[in-house]
Length: 212
Image (cartoon, rainbow, N blue to C red):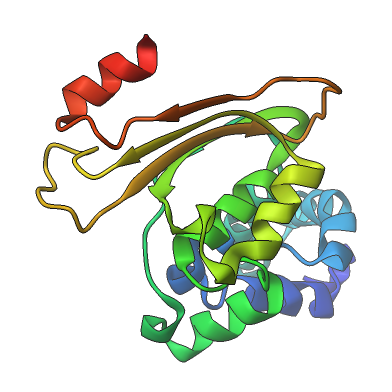
């Protein structure tokens, strides 16, 4: 691909970015240096795909698949809604531990909290995040800095402490749930909405209580 001005180091950086994507999923982050050249690199790859010989075209097709993923990672969204996976740091594979330690230090205690932080990073300035997750980020000592970030840099529209039985498929008291809706756009004087629904015994009752 060199005849089309494609920098080998950029391709290596792109490949390295996605080398652990099956483990990191949407926690994968695009390096800023690569993000700045993404549009130019995409144009050169398209040229190789259109005008190159058999080998160049196939190489360009392979790279374009990674570029498609990179463009998605680099996007900012109007809405991010998620029910992220739960995994305590001690249960994480070594590579995942290293990732969360390096990139999500204020939320690294559990994978779901990393996704809360990542959701905020993925929003447009006026975008809205909606997350249903475990509730330990609300009070655990491991999440002091995450809570501070919400108080200082996020507009919290609503927080519903659902407690147990938020999901009909999950019986018992083990899974304690909270639902948050937030934005990166701060509105001075905004009054957030808080709901304590822990005493309600079924998901149906909690839904009714939240809508009331």
